Image (tube, rainbow, N blue to C red; front, side):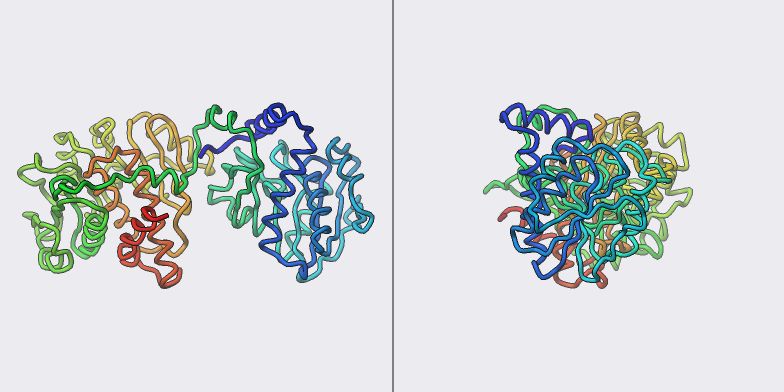
Length: 503
């Protein structure tokens, strides 16, 4: 699904109005009904509602919501904030439609700010996606007041003060919402860690925007849905055998970090690979043979660190490298030999990323169109560069993947999957319980297994990251977020596959 810019959102609204031959206030009514439907499923009429409206169309949405919630027997208090700005035509239309039981209270100075009841839900309808300058003056004072006194805030479409698709200036005030209900599609701002305190939990409601426009409009940003992922899964044939589903090689583990090899290997096996060989330092031989009996093991010539490649590479279909390998000189030399000689697809993670980041020579040896990187943010900084903000980081991510013709999974709450063509896909599964050691090793195993089975690098990234997060969500339902560990994610991978096949 595409993520639209603020300008494209306005264009979608306009085309919908043209296609359907409706007035703009009718689309506003439709949007407010969709928001109200979500709201009444979340909150009860026993909870007071305070709606704060600005002078534009986001404020007009708030006026319609006030009318609709009143009809549904909610106790609504309506506040219109205006420092003498002109109001939009649709705002004026819906101001006249308010029932007399919902009289608007006008806030023209800080002295007019009301007391917010302790159990009240505040609805933010001050500014929408059209905001182009920092919020200051009276509106900033209102936002600061709400952030200080509201126990529950729901933003209509986007938290007021937050820019949709570019960096918001630091000097402006921004509503800190607990929930944000976006019309039709989520906004790019929702997927960036720097906005967590403003967006809260985001939700989307359909308002019937033009499907013709949505299908034709160009966007480099997308978010992943379950329906799209289900279409990627390849069915198994009756007469297939272990050779049908690829032979993966994992180069992982080091002294004190053989567990990383175990996690990557177990995840790889649970992700459908036909055969798996693990090369690890000799010290890990007994551990791996015991913990992962389904895998074949090649003990490295060095006891504590990886130092050499397997003698024969022809039998493998994909290679995963990095978890727990350390940054010893001999391991760096082995990595250089791998990059210089193999034509197999590579999944590069953890210390393998750190080694490549430390050497321009290794970067220059990266095979074009054959690599998936899966860094966490600090590894990304070492490999690519430091960024001033998340928008700048997205552009650096796109440029790196274009220059090196690689794919990259930048891990996080909404992991960003970048392609050589400049597209970025945001994942929509996973939870905070997965912020624990070893879950990245699990992802390496999943990605390697999928590539070995013949999935394209893009397909492996999209499917692998979604499955990884889905398994984490299923594990959360069993053990909760706090106690969740990487092994729980592996144990729930079979359930994640079943969930996708049955849904």
